[in-house]
Length: 266
Image (cartoon, rainbow, N blue to C red; front, side, top):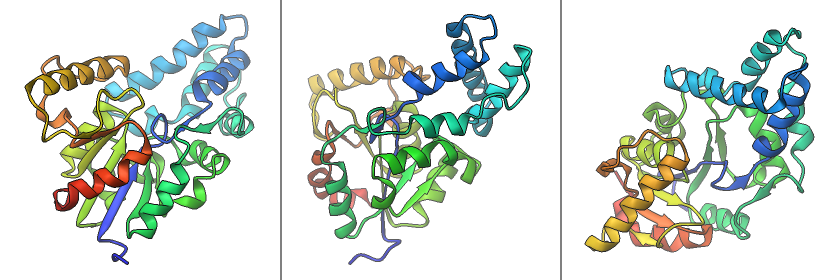
């Protein structure tokens, strides 16, 4: 068995391993409770705007504190702070028919990685109080070694300090995620091997061997994906935004890790 600290692989959570209930169920319920005569869609839009503005000013901890945003909007609507308990809303919707794993073989693959000597961790920008119910509902809580959240760390991806805390001094480090900015750019800046995992990936494999045509397709895909994610990425995608490998399903990951081999060591 590889020593605990020697090899660490971290996974983003939302839209990488799971589909959560936040956009479809949690935000609409919050908006309904805060509307107080306003349009629910306007309240929901205001919640997202507060989140984005906090990110833009570099306040990652506040950005992902949905209780802070909810309380501020409650007061704007003439309601008391605490009118809506966001954590309680999340728990209410953290049920199997509203949250699910994105890949059928997620748990077997995580077990395979851990049995093979990898320390497996979740590195998420969400707060623990919002993410733990989802991890438990999907069965992931028992299948990982650790969970790192923004409120625990005081930093959020793509801040390299968040990655450093999660990797814990491991000599071989890999991060898997779906976002071009938070996950790929963040991992590369943290000198970790980056793996983009998205169901719509244009190809599966290492990017080092791409020919010119494939590289052009990949760069166009990254720009399009970044735009959809509201990520700040220039049309001329920088080298640090190109992942080391791409997978469409988690079952593709173990063989890719084998191919990367010592290249995953920094």
